[in-house]
Image: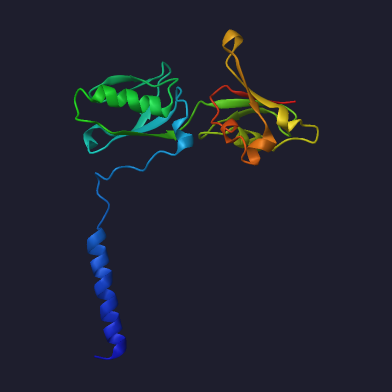
Length: 199
């Protein structure tokens, strides 16, 4: 056999072996691990969620609308309280509820459409105002959405205000330390209603 044909035959053989050994992804394949940033996202009314129960396709739902009272429905457990919970908290709640019916359930949640979330940014940024949170949004991303600091900004004295009255929490954001990697914990996922203040 000519060398060219022999090489082509060998290549086809190994290609076929590779295809047979890997095969298509199974419908029961475990979903990807959730990124750390997504775990901190706080669910609110009008969000649309995808809830997957591994190896339980009859329990999986791709479009669950969170109602104004913060709940949505799932088979077997009916109304699920989701409003105000992080994705990890909701995952734990659903797994505990399903454990009465399913052996060691594994639940995976994706926010397909964050619909009602927003944050405010005030002070020395180029475009202060209210912005929608169309995905889990960090403080740095929020500042970027406002087109960044203006020339008068004391960027290392930035704070994030969460809550109201006696429950108000003020969190520092030291820009230079964050971008240098010294204080990455200050670049957290914002909650709906958070206000960034840049003096």
